[in-house]
Length: 452
Image (tube, rainbow, N blue to C red; front, side, top):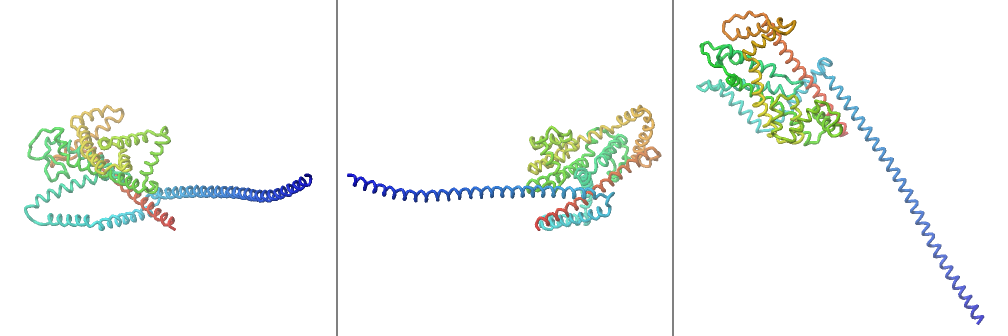
């Protein structure tokens, strides 16, 4: 029993040793594999940390490069803006004139190519010119009608052109109502009351107003004077409506193409800055900016009637209405239809009423009497104004002697004022075109540099 037990013990030990050996080998193998796995995980962790650190440094570097690029671009744009604003006739006359001529050539080339590319427009223009030439130069019984229509077309074109110049925004804009249409309505009003008739002989009317010599005297009413000047007034109003189209088209093109307003137009840039200020700094808005936002809200929320309301009153902020309509993609006929009705019909009649009432004969006499009551300078001002008024009345009658020196002084002052305003307008156009050419060449340089 003992031997057997010993053997069994030995055998058990041997067997247990064998098992122990086997287990140790297995444990060794498992521990080795575990160590390798842990080592691999540790190395992978370090690698990820390095990658994360590297990517962080790379992202930081790219962010810094982006900020530096933006700062450089801002400085470059600021420098270009300062150079552009210095292009005026009284600072750099030669370069300003050169850039003005180049811009005129550039615009003529661009629009000439567009017209030549459109066969329909080219055909219509060519056919119209040919028909007009034949009608005007061919002899026949139709010549009286043709000459009358031709004269009316020239008269309307003259006032439409003045209306466009008043609102198109070339340079500073020419205040043609104060300089041309207003004085014309006032002259017709004074002549109507002086002559007792509105049947002025043609010619010389409308170039010159002379009382009719047939001795017929009619009843002069407020509505009859309005009717006499309706054609030229409505043509001028239609011209102002046409002059509002460029801001609309520029804002619409910028919205559709996604261009940066800073690169295109100062008005668009100001509009975008006002929109940002409206969202983030509404409490810091000035009174003018609040007025602009009020016009924008009316146009955007009310639509056609809002545009009509803004166009029907003298509104220096109406340019913003055009930009707003273009930016929010308001249909063209909605914008232009409301603008045309408001400016050519409603607003024009309001302005005519004001001028006719202001130059009513009774009101003028009363105003001259009240002028005498002004301290110190009242009587001194009354004399030349009365002389000017009497001189204008004498001119309405043929062969009437004009001997009013005070009237001549006031007339010459007004003429010089008109000449000064026109010259200022022309100078502002030259400066504006020169600055546009400067912007054009810088844009070409920047585009070429970005491609390279």
